[in-house]
Length: 110
Image 1 (cartoon, rainbow, N blue to C red):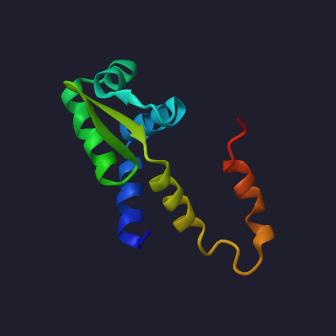
Image 2: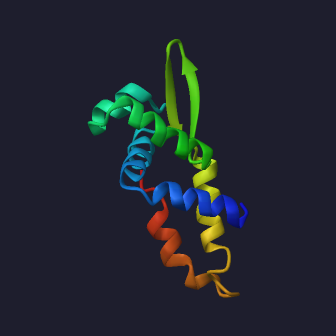
């Protein structure tokens, strides 16, 4: 990931609704949710939700797939991983043990 892509992803997540949408989709998993269901769960008007989902999609944090008349959104875990890797790229400064607490904190305990 380059700096511009990281800035787009961080800007997308820097807005309350989009952060909630992304967290909901991460909890939901790879199957994702239809846009209408995301809007209903978060009590947000559908056209507003569509705008937020578009920003997350353009930032590489969600992926969209058409299902009949609706669009299903899922977390793009590759994009999310790339953002985390970019943020941690220089974290260790030659001492990987310094990053271990961060890695443990973000490791899924499922």
